[in-house]
Length: 345
Image 1: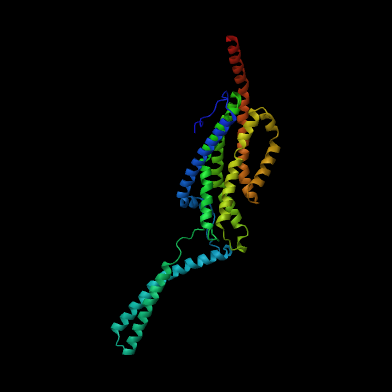
Image 2 (image 1 turned 60 degrees about the vertical axis):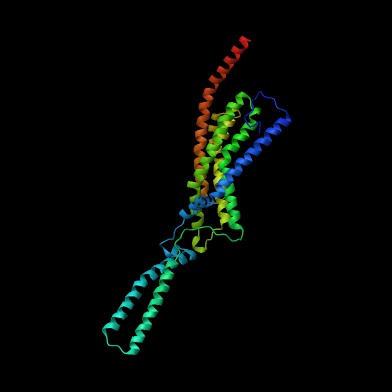
């Protein structure tokens, strides 16, 4: 574990030393990833509830019976039946009190008294059964994904915890990757690479937040309400979590557009003016990428994914123009420092 600090550009390492550094960084990265996974698996209940919230918030039982699916009709029937049962209990209790009052006020024959006693016993049994039925009505009416296999709950929980651990450990993993390739960068390239490497996790986390809070609920709502009157919609846990993770991760990756724009402009591959002139082609490319990357065929999800990408592209072009204006002054200062060094030598 001797080489975990970034190596300078002027340092010279042998192949064995490079491999030793790579091994050490991989070991440390795996340890951090393992700790992150242990934390995520420990909090798997909170984690699954968090991933389920977009699903639960996009679907409620409709008041219009013509718009409800058969499963929703069954849920409505169960809730209304439980309410009717709770209202029936006081009626049965009142009827029993009336029977007791009749037995005490009227001169009844033995047969009539036996009939009232039998009816009171039936009323008691009916009240107990009604109370039990009302108490057993489902209290959790939230929509949850279903599992179909014996091992699916464990495997799905394990998978979601793994993806969450990767997201949690991402900043550290990116730092290790940057520190390993740092010796290959010249001082000028390092000035370009460092801000970009800092932007990557920030933009990725911003994309993840946008995907979770904005894109995912709207995509789920559109897909689950599309022609839903003709289907009993059951959502399998494996498919739902895969869909949610892929959508969120892809939007996080799409948010890296500013990194790509700044990289090609600061390395001199293309100028900000050329990018601005090609804005129409860029918009078309973003539309194609959003359509291919989002795991749904609907235009709503594609447009939701496109909107922030276009904003990020425009902001990155603006930032690239600002940096291009400052570049001549910085290069002149570097040449001045170099001339000073040469004159002193």
